[in-house]
Image (cartoon, rainbow, N blue to C red; front, side, top):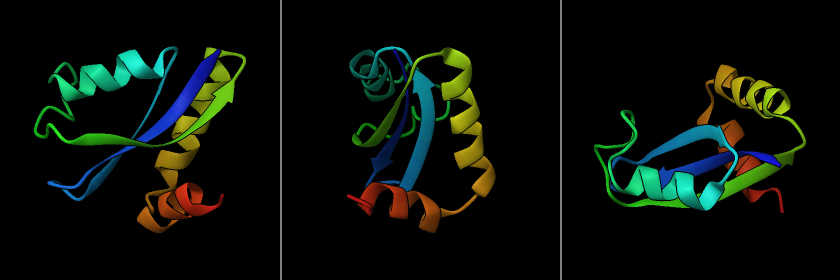
Length: 81
């Protein structure tokens, strides 16, 4: 299984969208400065994910969300439940 995920940092007031195969491991990478973009904060928290059967499907969805360039779109995804 492959995932897209959204994490949020309160200190930066920013969302990050990514894709991976293991969400727990990837979040740990973000929290421990092993990701260039997210190393400036240590308070990333998981907010949302979607599951896909292939890496390419997950990556396409990640790019779709990023191309929206919209915090409102991301917050609507997170709050849709």
